[in-house]
Length: 83
Image 1 (cartoon, one colour):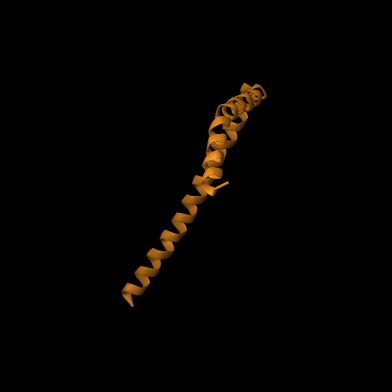
Image 2 (image 1 turned 60 degrees about the vertical axis):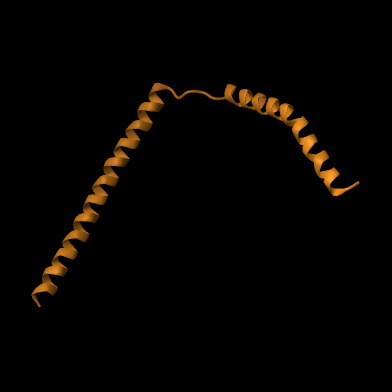
């Protein structure tokens, strides 16, 4: 068989199996979605609290680091500009 004919047969086979693959994909999606559960109100509140506290801690950390770097650079520039 010629290579072009083999390639054409592979394309035709792939196209013919496409609807079945789509059907199998949607079946798998539906099966997995049946396993999904929503978090309880208590879980949502707990994770929200953790996120808010974490955001504030990071904000405080970056404020301190920014302040320290800013002061260091400012003092260095002031020192070297006068000497």
